[in-house]
Structure formats: structure tokens, C-alpha cells
Image (cartoon, rainbow, N blue to C red; front, side):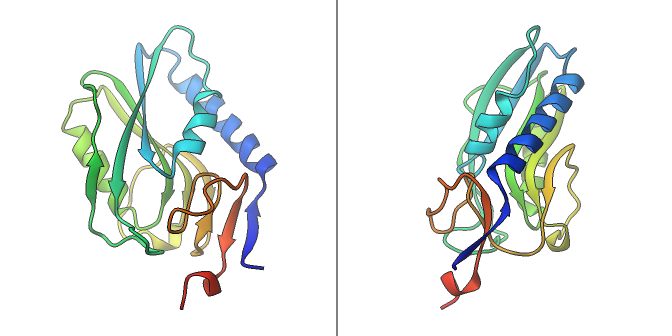
Length: 180
């Protein structure tokens, strides 16, 4: 088989709910919380996560950015391009970056530096997956879904060459699928 399930739909749902409860607790006194989803990979995670956050006294808004560092490759190129920027100001607001996966840490580090210059009240991250072995730079991750080994992951919004995003689980794409 070309893919192997790493985390089931049920395991993901349980972990995302836990993260939502943590975020709800941590931001209960926030006036303005902006969730910044990094497209395209984080869209499923962000969708489920935002529905697990319950802050009735907080203005919760959603923003999106598109940052490219992969193309059709299986590892980050190190070249980071902003394809789509925020449409509103984050100055004075609590900002939570929603990212699908941290491989090298370079993209998230760059993004945090960029957004920090826009003077948010606070800036933190929620990451679905982290490859600790692959980190080239340390990046602070406040809300962590799962640590994973150095394998190529697909499903639950993550893709290979724009395929497999629709899978309800997270799986490893076997090398024979992308190494020719």
C-alpha cells in the first residue's frame, strides 16, 4: 500500500478538542483573538480547532496567509514566499498562528518575526504536527498536536502535489509514491 495511517480520524478529533479546551482557558480574558491560518495545509485543522474554542466574551476572527516553501517537493526548500498576506491589522490583538506542520522551523520562525513587527498584543502558535528531528531552528509552539518522525505526511489538509488533502486521517506517504 502507498500510505499508512499514522493518526486516525478519532485520534485527531480528540487531540484537536483538547487543544481547543487549552486555548479557551488561556484566552478567556482576551478581548480580540485572531486565528491566522496558514494555507493551504492548515485549513482542515483550523476549521476543527475554531469550532473547539469557546470564548463568548472575546471577538474571535479568522485570517489567512499563504506562504510557500515546498512547491511539489517533500521537504522545505528554505525559500519562503508570501503568496497572500493578512487583510486586516493585528496591532494590539492576540494572534494565534495555525500551522499544519513544522519541519525545519524556518517558515514558522520567519512568519513569527514578520507578524511580530506588526505589534500584536501576543503572538503564539498552534501546530498540528512537528518533526522534532528535522528542526533547524527552535520555534516556540504553545499548542502542539502531535510529534512525528521524519516521514512524509498526507491527509487532514496536508498534501503531496495537491493530492490527498481530503483524507480524514493523517498518513505516511510511502517513498515509492514520490521518489522516482
